[in-house]
Image 1 (cartoon, one colour):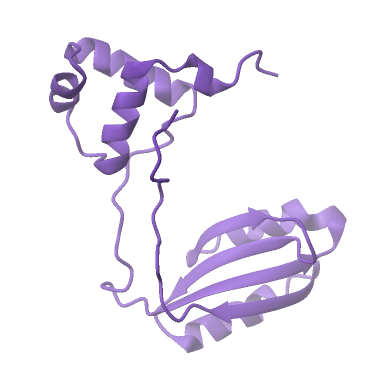
Image 2 (spheres, helix red, strand yellow):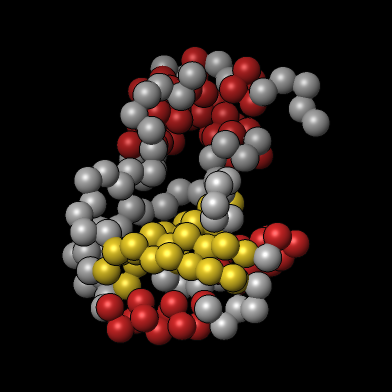
Length: 158
């Protein structure tokens, strides 16, 4: 177990780098170095350190799935046989239309966020999912309108 929370290992330069990257992962090392007032070599080594710590997991593009023809967004809650929750989560995480898998508390054990191009695709997914023997019950809700779908929180990192 870590002796310090990772947040305590970050200084102002790290925080500034993370703030820039969360808004645009394509920002070059040179641009980042200008923004934080450090040399490109320092910025590069800081980024490598943040990656090694697991704070920066990847650099990716944020896609607008609706513009790509994915019109059906769903939230599904699952009750799962307790000793097989992690097995079910791993199975679901491999599904291409699953955006997120959450291990949750309460009446249900697992929540998944999915995206499909049609209701028939969602229907086929649900039927395939319910063949997993450890899933006892599911409730699927269609998303009518996305009010906010951002991968980052708005407040500062620290």
